[in-house]
Image (cartoon, rainbow, N blue to C red; front, side):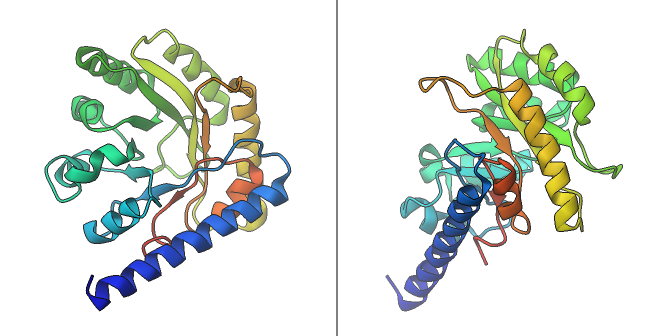
Length: 240
């Protein structure tokens, strides 16, 4: 391997070890996070070469993309296609109904269900593919009009509406914190999300599939893990 590639590999693995160390410390501080914390690598802006290095090193097992067509270009038709089978690919962006078919074809998980309408479309296409697709409901944790998701008060109702859809498996909640929020504000919104998650996804038996509370990104993942997140989504810090 050329020197430049070795140097880049060393830097990426150092980033990974730093992040996972911080996650472990945050989980230890929380005292309320019984389940293992897994890292979702946000690969939407990452160079394929960097993603390949971390997959081949065993560091990336779960990857996230927020645009269906971009993900297909990389993971189905592009440079990451040979490694596709080695990761669980999550869709983490806002999903439109006209992209539901391609999303069901491309992704292993859909983490951003925010309406019965989009859930029904994903369910229809998953059924046609013979897939049972794990999904998460996106919580709206901010008053921003540009932020997708359902309010915490609406979450339980949407979850109940999803349960009869036979080709979907509701497996948790995902949320994006308010931009520029203070640590105190972050703790409050993350705590609210954790209460909803505990209410709707109580601790499962040891042989049950894992459920996820996906909170936290590069700037706030430690606070999110302290609050109970077990699937933080990290891109910038990992691929810096």
